[in-house]
Image (tube, rainbow, N blue to C red):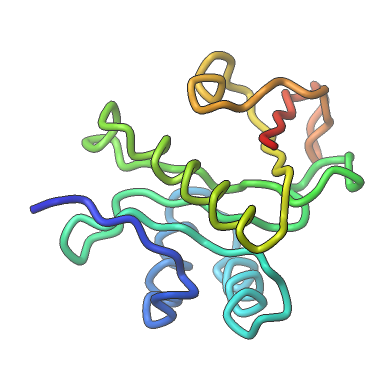
Length: 149
């Protein structure tokens, strides 16, 4: 069985499952995910959510939202909630999802994208460049903010 990469706007039937999956990884309330997902599904935002499926199982995902809980509200939109199930790591899942997000949003006239992370070295592999530091909501130490044009 192969891995399939999709957008939520092409598969709105996965909305509830995707929101529950992201909640199980990041512990952000399901309602917050549903609100962002509904905005892309009803066309009120050009942003989207991106999933990797193995059969019917969600094994990776990320979203694009206005702001990923940091103090640089002027730097938008943001990739958020990047996650790959442990047994699927090292297979390029995150890279494929990031590439799909960049291409899809660029086709919709949205570029650049930003991404807040504490990782160093990972996102650079996929064309992301360090842009500046930003302070995450409730954090005391700044995190790295990347850009992909």
